[in-house]
Image (cartoon, rainbow, N blue to C red; front, side, top):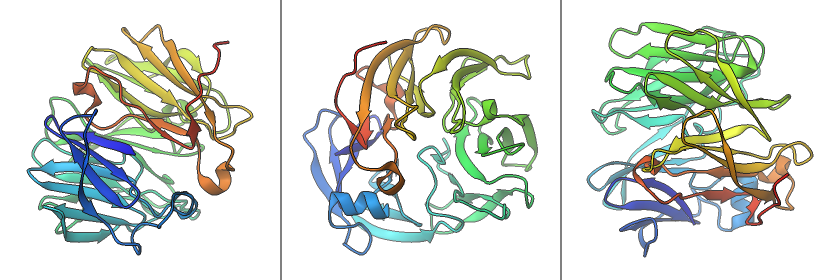
Length: 321
């Protein structure tokens, strides 16, 4: 089972083709809806091999959710599909490439291999996914794809957008959805390549997603233009966040089992990061069945207990070294 979203009242999860809901992260969970075999592969190994699985479940409001599948977004209400939308470029947005704004609007960034570096769009819906339009579009050759979109705290019409992957492509943008003004917070190196972002006061914290070199925790103060490396990490960071205790959280992933370790890190101040636990990559080849990824559900910042989803990892604690 994968837990996707704690909305403050209910925990949304999935297992196989079933969407589950429970009164809290500890359950018990009941089936809210079931998707057919043409949308979700019938067995676990085939789901991992084909990526035809439930990638995300995001609570929108009341009894309405957004479900992210391969190449498809579904809006479901009371267990029934009410809208469908193809994701355009590539496969599907990454885990933090979709967000719901405080006013109910939905955003997602296109993600795919994009070898020709065609324009990449940030898509917006103001009507629960019934219709979509481009809120922003990159220039040809500018970026490969969008990694993340996140509301700027305290600025209702502004979002952070992170893009990748190589050369001058990695960048963090601050986009105003009202007037389409776009500011480049930083760009041009692997330190700006990120999949998730923590907004800490007026500053920013993230872990890099460098698949070819070393990875670090970075901090950016409001009056600075260059991020400061804080601590080396054992792999690329796929998830970042906070919990209700005020702790900062990071999770590294295994893309190359020879170089990377999947580990959870915790910090109270963003400077000193404590290793909490490590997991081993399972025996299946990453190229076919996917990387080893640890992630947190949406809404983790409202939970005192840490909820961790494991994908392609074995629940085996490694000795610290």
